[in-house]
Image (cartoon, rainbow, N blue to C red; front, side, top):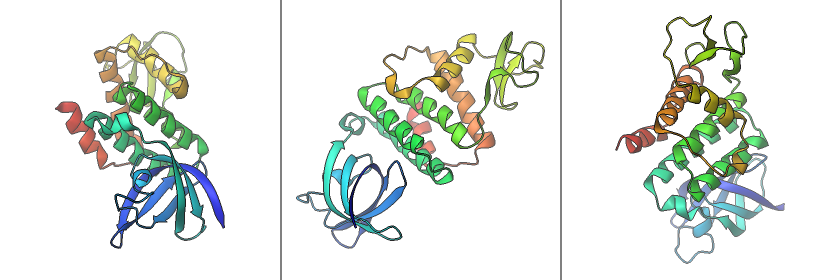
Length: 242
């Protein structure tokens, strides 16, 4: 059966001398596709079968096996990402994360969030902030969303003083027991970033302190509750500290 699917290449593997097998994330599933001759420079499949290629794939589809690529139309090669090591690092990280979350819950919303994130990084928005927005939103798909609308201990929506990854959410002044205090702007921005439409972002003006506190909270939260280990996290941390 021949069909056309839109998706992003999330991994690629060499196959025989000149071909490769690619995995493509789509709205509906992750498809394994064999691309004959794709490793050859003159191949019509060469450019569109590398990781982070957003394309329309014409395939001979096999539901329980390897589909075969017959034609390809590149929609976005994310050229600006490929020119910058920091953008590459974060894009590699979110690709690995999204693939794992998608395997946990096959939700087409995950694909849309992933594509929006790559587009924003490619457009020049801060890759760490875009990655943290995506990570915040994916927590709901993992079933471990933090409490960000009221105090996690008493439900109070007023007099919030900090947010704690250990407790799993916001803490008000009545329930505060010596947890690390973060900036009020960090608390406000965390909620805003969780609810913002990623695709409609036009400006990100966030101080280094707030970015750092948000990133620290999300890092610790994932480490405590997600059970997800990503090899690409090592690359991100090295790039961040360099």
